[in-house]
Image (cartoon, rainbow, N blue to C red; front, side):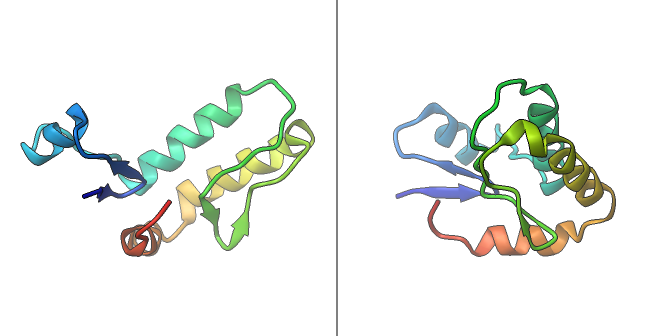
Amino acid sequence: MLVGTGGLTLFPGTPLLAEARRGEFDPLTEKELLEELKLFVENLTVDCSFITHHTISGVNLTGPNFLDRKEKIVAALDREIRQGDLDRMAGIRGRKRTL
């Protein structure tokens, strides 16, 4: 059985799943997930197709030509961190059953 914890799926037989069941692992909040993604994007310097399952205020950030779009992606993430409805996002994520 898979166990979902927000943006992370914990798989059977893994140490992290065991830790979560014992209450020793706390998944990131929606805000922390977005902050982590923003930090990653800010430090990514290679041109690529950027793929994310995050939808920021109804805007899908996935697409080619990452470096051409990097500033817009960072700005969208920053806006969502500061002004987004993180409770709504957590609700949407909580209802997902597959990656």
